[in-house]
Amino acid sequence: MLDFVYWPISAILWFWHKVFSVPFGSGSGVSWVLAIVFLTFTIRVLLVKPMLNQMRSSMKMQALQPQLAEVKERWKGDQTKIMEETRRINKEAGVNPIAGCLPVLVQMPVFFGLFHVLRSFNRTGSGPGQLGLSIEDNRQLANYIFSPTDVQSFLDARLFGVPISAYIKMPQDMYEAFQPIDFTRMNIVFVAVPLIILTAVATHFNAKMSITRQRERIASGKQKSMGSAQMQSQMEMMNKMMVWFFPAMIVFTGIFWHIGLLCYMGANNIWTFFQQRWIFAKLDREEAEEEEQKKQAKRATAPKPGVRPENPKKAPKKKRRGSPGNGNLSIDKVVGDGPAHTEDGDSPAAGGGAPDGAAQEPPSAGQSPAPGKRKRKKRK
Image (spheres, rainbow, N blue to C red):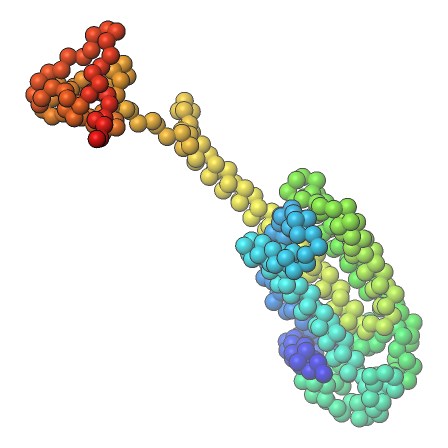
């Protein structure tokens, strides 16, 4: 059903086992454990860029929360419009919420794929999902890309005296696949329990580091808190689940996890710890550089010391022609080569004034101008 997951996982595991078989030997438990660890690192290296993009997208989405809250308030009750406006805002900001789920969507199939591949090395059980093979048939049957020789090498490998695919609640009849049977259930407990505790504690601290950073950013004003009290309550509940519930689930379900799977989880948490520190430092540098660019742009547009800033909204007024104390008529146009024009377009000659070239005296004090000079000729 999930062969498209099982085959790539087994191929990567096979490759790293061949690499570490050179210094440690193909039947060594160290070579198999290192193959599992480097399978983890291979997957996580491929997910570094998607994880970085997810963190950037998450920061952008947090900055968009006020706009999204305003959209929900404005279009309250209209889910179609809310979704449409939300998609528009995310698109304009270059945010893809689905892309942020890629790392989780990839890691979950890898976890279950590795669980299935490790479990398929021992198919002698009669429980759910088991084939009930005999010891000989199991050792002579390939496991995906692993040949029968590789299967035998895996079954014979030991980590602190315990088979790599053993687990605490493994049925007693499945012990027969590991020849010779030189271990007990308590041996499995002594190896598995420290790995379970290490995985749970690492999961707790990784989640706590992420949440602490989020709270520090909110306190410093770099990140805005959730708008409504309901959203804040939901976020607090999710944070508590990440810090306490998920580690507790590892402790309670760890009795069903293979030794090899616990090694995978331990390596995955160690990688997560260092990757988070690197990503957080990188994002902080990018944010500081962006703030510095904004400050430089603001300084570039600011007026120089001693220079009065210009207001683009206030345009300079055009100077009107004519002296302010002489009405609408300019004297230098009256004494000229042609008729002077008033602002309404009429010339003095049209109202019975002096002929061209004759100087016209301005009216004396208390005397009104001639009617022909101010009024238009009435039509008959």
